[in-house]
Length: 358
Ligand SMILES: *Cc1c(COP(=O)(O)O)cnc(C)c1O
Image (cartoon, rainbow, N blue to C red; front, side, top):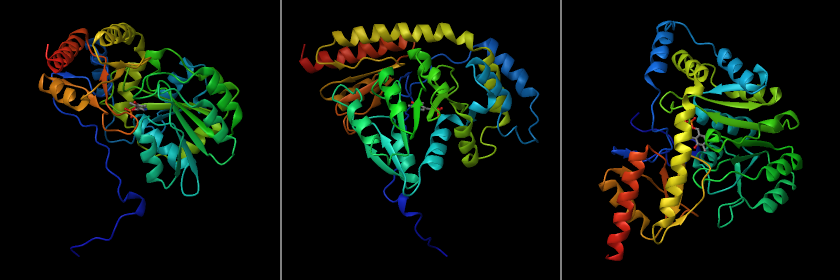
């Protein structure tokens, strides 16, 4: 038959995720670590990969990694689950706690994957938009969950793409106010150096998402994990693909996690460059610069998409949110190496000067 019937109705109008990657000299659009895994760790990885039996299925649950991460976090293996990137675990969340007749509370503007997964799984999405400074409308969220019909909430902290953490006092109140599953997405916690992990002990409805993609330079490998109560982890295991985390990725992540102290100087450098970028951006006329506890800075300016083009023509790729709802006029620049950041700053200043006709 040279025709095919329509796919599931919830796919109508869905646009596939497109990170809009383009080749660039300074690639500052995807919140990756600008420093790749160092030569010594790469050599150790190569030795481990040589030992992998390619003909055998991997350990479905990656228990060695679960044990390493559990130990580092003062938890048990049953409180940790690995995924094919954090993205797989976000999808598993929507499968396990969402679905037709179920409700997800979203706090836009935030990571667009959350709402996309909800739509894919036929989950109802309730939006409680952030305030104009992108802080959470805390009282509105607490009032909404009090209605009792919300099944899960995701709070990115720091929030991508806006940059700030949720206030710890708010998260405590939220966890106490509802039995909905509350995912705190800590994909960038190595840059904020703050975590809600201590609350796991008292709150079975808390699940924390982390990833190897950002601080640990493994965006290309696909490895993420969640921390939660054993009964929550068990539900995720029911919906996950049994072999989603392959043996090679497991080997790489084991070496990287065992050597994670080696990433600290690079993380320190990003945090210090973040301070410099915030300061320099605030000096540029016409910029509204949002504070950041992560590895990027979001800023708003006039003619933002023109500025994006100008930056790109000069070899600097940043992320253009200027047409995204509630992010009008905003661009997001990932903190790169000092050289990349200088390139970005010089080019942006050039754009602003031209515009002013100086
Ligand atoms: C990058 C990111 C993730 C996870 O990314 P993976 O590469 O799939 O591990 C999760 N949440 C947010 C907010 C992110 O920015």
